[in-house]
Image (spheres, rainbow, N blue to C red):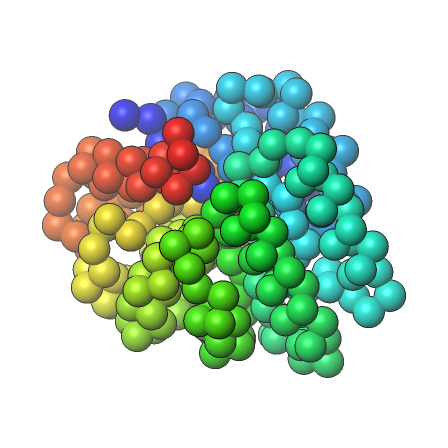
Length: 256
């Protein structure tokens, strides 16, 4: 069974010199689908171009990243998201959420943007891809208020505690597991086995957070098998089973 990278920024400038080679290596490694989260409207044309070049492999999300929720622009950015949802088809709404690591002053408008995009996801019957940094309580507060059978998706780059993982799963979400699971100080490897594999999907978040032995270098989707191998160690089952189960999970979320 082929692998799926549920979160990769292949349109990033960091791939401008060798993007086709990066995608070629990933395909050679068995990664056949790449899900690209949105940041803001400025990246939209880059994403569309890449989708046109690899229509069978690349799938786009639409959304406003919490770090780009700015007082002077967020309303126009949200209007752009809504316009595109009306005009085109997307795999998910993301990446959306709350980030209080860089800036706590925008919490109120981050909450507003997150809630609005959740409601659009329910309206369009789409999964959401959630970005959280230093904001689990704030994210869970909104998810609890908005929870319904129509609200589901992925906690991207999950790096929380066991209790937070269980809370996410109880709300109908899967955990996106990437390079952090291979880090000695990543911590999630210590409890992840307590979470059923039925709630796990694989991602790279490339070009960020490359797994060991590439930590500190540019990440790329071809490294997905390294994450599967680490999960094989954690769950004590064959890598092929990790691939099969996590791929089925991703296919279910994205309705393939």
